[in-house]
Image 1 (cartoon, helix red, strand yellow):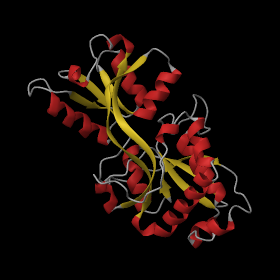
Image 2: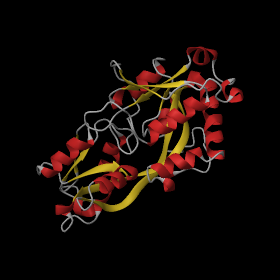
Image 3: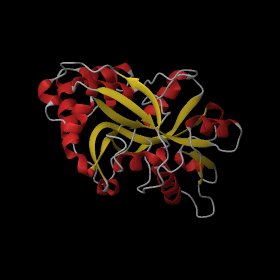
Length: 285
C-alpha cells in the first residue's frame, strides 16, 4: 500500500503521460450537471498518479500506454461524466502538493486515506488493502514470519507510510539490539534488485501488488507472515474541491450499481478488494 507521509514538499513538474479515454458527448447528463463549472467547461478531468505500482497503475516496458485498476476506474468515471481523463505522473512525495495547489483535480494512485491527511484532503474510499512483507523464494527456508526479519534489512518505498509501519512492527517484535533495518528506495523494481543483490532480505508491498507480482513471476516470490494494517485507498481531492468530490462519488455509485466497478475489479483479479460503500473520509487512524 503506497502512502505518502503527511507533509507538503516542494512541487516538482508533473509529467503528462497520456490522454486516456474519449469524452462521451452525452455521458450522464444528471451526473455531469453536478460538476464544477470549470471542470465541465474544460471537458477534462486532471488525474494525478505515481508510476509504477502494478496492478494499480503501470505501463509495459517501451510503452507509454497506461494500464491498471486505478487507470481504468479513472477513465470510467471521466467517461460517465462526459470528460476526457488526462493523467499526470509525479514522484510520490509530490502527490499532495499537486492537488492542493490546484494543478490537478484529484489523486487516484493506491493512496491511503489517513486521518492526518484529512486536514489537507478529502478522500473517497474505493479499495480495501493492507501491508505485507515479501521476499524472493530463495529466502523462504530461513524467513518465514515477521519475527525472522529481526536483525535483517527491508527495502521500503521512499516517503511512504510503509516506512513507519515496518519500523514500528520491528520495535514491537524484535529485541532492541536486533531491530529491522529499513532502507528507503523509490521503486518496487529497485527493492527486488536490492533483495537479489543481498543488500536487503525483504520488502514491503500492498497485498494487491504482491498478488500481481506472484502472478507475473510464479514461484519467485512469497508472502512473509500476515497482512497487516488493513485500510483503504482513497481518491483524494483538495478540501476546497467538495463539489467535484461529490460528483465523483455519485459517479462511482452509478458505476457500482450497473456492475462496471465489479467488472474493473475482476479484470485485475481484485474482487476481494472491492468496497460495499464509497465512504468519504472513512479512515479512523
